[in-house]
Image 1 (cartoon, rainbow, N blue to C red):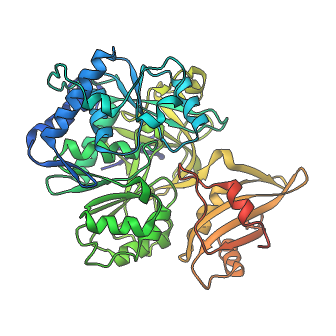
Image 2 (image 1 turned 30 degrees about the vertical axis):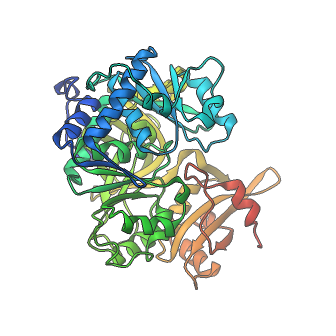
Length: 525
């Protein structure tokens, strides 16, 4: 339950999740390893992982993880180290992650489908103690970086002591890389207390248990994959490993949901829209929880899903990598046909603030930068103290906050709305325009599924905006412009509109691929 915090005599744009005092949580209470061990030991004969045709029980997974822990310990890995994992999703990947956590190191995943130069850059910058990968990728790390493979773990014949809970509290549990505005990757260091708080909150809002099957299909370089891979194990559910060859294929994903009796799944909004209608009501009957995040959810996508599958609980979730998976969530059920989709209220132990340039709260209804504080905060960026100091700041009251760079507003009813990015501001004839705000208003149209707005330039001058819009059949550019004109100042109404029938192109991180978009859909195409 989130509350609005008063400032002086007026209510300010601050929301606080249920309080969890950091001092009230001991290291054992915030140990990810302890939480996972409790889940594995509760029912060792239950199936914990389904990886293609392979079924792995909780007890079998624990034994595999013990071999990994023994191997890592023999290679000198321990508390305070980081271990890079360069592998596709698999049962071996999960066992390796458990072994890493058990010996007190931090799990650092990398997407093996990245260009080799990018992988090399990530490993060189992050300087892990060891790389876990398959033989095909073993040469991608910098010279001198020790490498072990799943075959090494399978062949381990030495002693394999019982899996340990490992450290907790403020110790690092994982490092997740995210892109930066400068082009240099940032390794976000997340502590145990943040992850355990997030897992426990989720279990209270959408509880998992025996019989639940969670699809692990997020890219391993996307932080929601940590929840898909580990949270089910902590609470007695089963992880179903998604086939990497099916990534991005809505028909294959829909078939997987039915074939593997998935009960909980995460989509980016684009994929949610593509999967909608590919499942009959009977084929989707087992689905209980559907999570959506990584981009703005349009009302059209929300309404289409809930019309087709009204028994599912659809959550719109928001959270930068720097704040441990999710910071806010909104249950969409019951909100159909009521306009834009909020990003909701904070998770437990987290609070959010819509602030001005001085980091102080603005009034409800005003637009400001979204700041996040509480137990979910990352420690900062690995080996980048200057950039950490830029984004993780202390407000005038002495509180540590993360500056998201996202624009938001809190309405008088306590609903938080995401409005785009601060760093996408442009000036049109002296008038400041937020490209994210234009996209936000376009997406309020029930027939618009996706939108991306860029600056329209003439020489050195910005003369207007260009909107790429994915819309249902029958919605014309003129109708889109009329919709925008009814919501935006004249200067912000798109000067040109390119209407698309196919989804916006995306990078492997799920972001709009602007270069591909411009190349394929120049104005006038």
